[in-house]
Length: 146
Image (cartoon, rainbow, N blue to C red):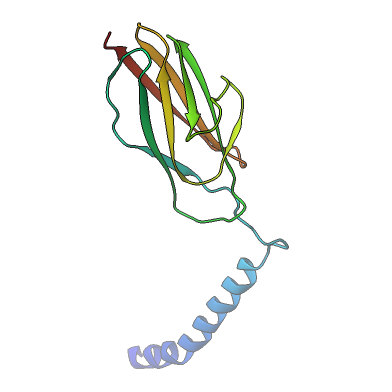
């Protein structure tokens, strides 16, 4: 009797496998639309910077945007807000940024230059965002060395 069931089970095994493949292919193709991902999260890496700055001195801030995927139409933007002290932030030799204005970043790896215009401690935030709504906040606090 056991031999009969083993023989019967061996003959039906290919039918069960074929049936499983057929069911999985039918259920996996139920969507009419292709799902296209265009939202790519990112991280911002910042090289260490000094904790002190004196009035009139400039500090270099090296930044790099790292993504797990590469999409050619992604655009990155920067805005900043200074809430303690006074200073200017600029990209290379361009004009200084205005607080809360949005500026497009031309590359994923860049340098910002912060120039102190005060003799007190200074704090500001830099926001990096992309055209898909992802955003990262970076906070900087500098003590005065004057």
